Length: 504
Image 1 (tube, rainbow, N blue to C red):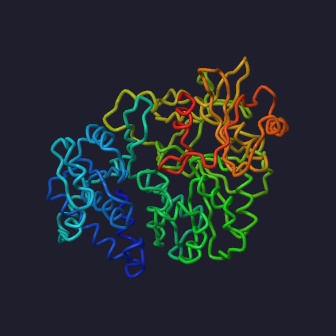
Image 2: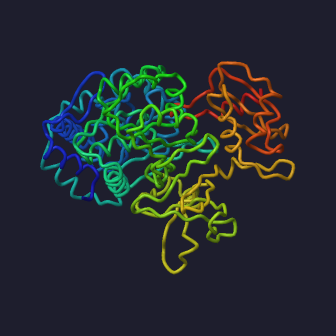
Image 3: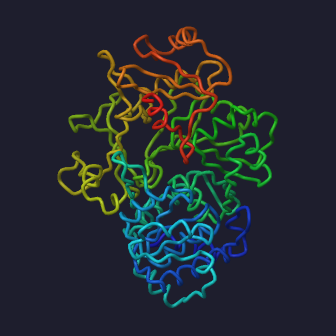
């Protein structure tokens, strides 16, 4: 299997009449899924896509998933973008990619009229889907794809304001999908509820995990993400067996009380990734749904979504650290000290990743690629690329990885080295706190703690409670209660907005 899209061929051959994809407007069997993807591929090729990247400027939908597969059949990597993306950011992505085709729909196409497409053709998904598949053309095209070719380019925010296009190879997705299915024992009866936007790499767990096992992928309507009380009802109605959500969504569901009295006997797997999952809310899930396997996954966009995992096998107190566990199959984790040596057990080091899931680099950005994707200094005798995540971790006494936060989220204040995430974990242990974000105000050299709460939290009383978990030097100088913390489009806490609020 050189191309990830071959998983669709296999699933369609074995489960052709079974439902593969479902959104608010349509339900597709595997045969229909494959047929539409191959129609799209033929039309893309005839529009001159060649092997150039294809931008997917579409709302999240079953049609968008078919377009991803169509790009692969056409031998091109796809680049999903947010359908609400600012045009200035889309312009930067176009300049980075120089795409052959931009796939969109009739409603969004007008937004492209004011920007420079650099010669890229605009193709409506409605027209592509109606094309007749050229089977001979597709066989020739797919035969030229090798597993080291790029399958997708996922754009993340760059520190300079320029988006970075993380370029993932087919082999990364093939191995990752195999690991997902084997680890969670998914099969053709698996029904996944997709929460992650398609421009966020967590979505690959759902798209390719369901494809690999011949299961069903159900797309959660975006509007439901605004109403956490209704999410468990959706899981019940659709008979969902697996979810992979960001912790913020799980926190909101737990805090809403939606899990009280709900019966979800079909739900078997609850996985989460993207931020630190507080034990306080995880324990609410575990008490309400004890039959589920809970998995704490870790990984940046640069390594095909996930490189480490921990299957939660015991109860954790609210203040206990939750491990990120061990490396996934075909991946290896190395912790490097500042001197470039391997960290000893219990010693913090930068988490670096080696293996089939490591990205090819950043699209059309050789300088920043060279800084992040480097030769493994522990293997000087042969070429071995590793990705430096910028995250800190250590091996605990049980041989499990413990995440310590970002290198750039670790501060030094009055001679003390402080991990801001530790303050957040402590804050989550206090009654009335539903979420928390610690920000270092560099201008005033103080720690500011933003707390999501529905009540009042007197500052002095709050810090007295906090001192039960963290030392005096880590206590915040300022507490800002909020009814709701701001979130990014990926449902992570929007720390950039919080930092800007301090500058106002």
